[in-house]
Length: 83
Image (tube, rainbow, N blue to C red):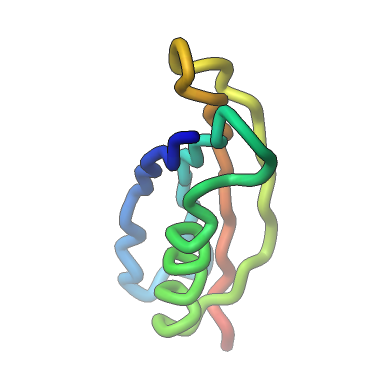
């Protein structure tokens, strides 16, 4: 059972009205659920600390990363500046 890694872009937070970020989550091969939801939570909370709220989130399946690697899920998050 592997816990994958995720990668995410850093939002500039330079007083933009909207910020778009992509987070790649790697699903565990055995069992259900992502092994790195904590990292997704960290991204959302970091943007909240900058004065943004999560406006929209979409996901798409990125396919298998290899034997015993599980699936990759690409999440696109749109944050809106709280005024």
